[in-house]
Length: 413
Image 1 (cartoon, helix red, strand yellow):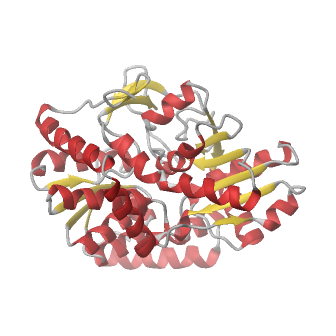
Image 2 (cartoon, helix red, strand yellow; image 1 turned 180 degrees about the vertical axis):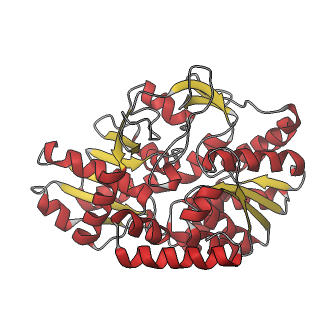
């Protein structure tokens, strides 16, 4: 990696007005990374506040179903706020305090990053504004409620497709006008340098733990690791510790939506539809047309409904170190139900993409395979959306009644 590039991907394609802000952020990040006391403070904070290390759970029932192939689940769903997002956010919060800023802004899709940012701001005494696509506000209403109760102001974004990419655009507009006292807590390993590298570093705590845990429990490294990929932070979090181990296959699972041939998905690499371009401050693969205009994306999971992918993952895919696959909405809902029934674990829809692909491939893996699935978050936030996808009549009646109530009040449900 040189000057924010990973191969040909990355960089910092930003307006001149943000140059000094990024220079200061890069300096603060480099200083923190070189300071062992920062990492020690970060680890202690995550242990005492977020419950780390998260368990590596042996899925005994699934392992038995698949002929004794050993299946483990890395439980990021047990983090404070219910997802891996807390790792990155709490680390950036420590940087904010170092830089002496008093306000944070963030974008969010599934709401987990927004929840984590609002939580961090409450703990550290910072003003907080969260930008969220209006469509995501509607399908992630429980998280919106909790963000607001934590003291954050949630701003619905009604432009464009009303999803994650539009929320990022609005957050960047805010930052241009408030950079002197505001830090943008970017939620994934995308964006202009140093964000991809910084987020990946803070999330590496996942893989460091998983490597120690699997060696303690199995006495060997895993053969396969599966992780869902929206921007790529949880995938990079677990992959990094195993990159030198070429015998460990790393599989990133994108949103297959209605199918890779449907045009309604968010598979940049697995679908072969991604084109190299520049957006949101970095160079990577994006879903765009021949004129460079970003295409609409679709996923049952709001957190994977994103047009680009981390430049670090794009490079690792180019180098054939990470394989990419996809899981459709139908496969994802089925995998969520299967994991709940088999192991009593309720995964987020995003994480269920990794579960779905692992379940699909397990029968064809060697019988001595050792598989880790990185469960990036829990499914509490998805209860209304999953109930609707499953077609539960009781929940549908409840949702319709609530929608009618809010319409009568002139508010969004």
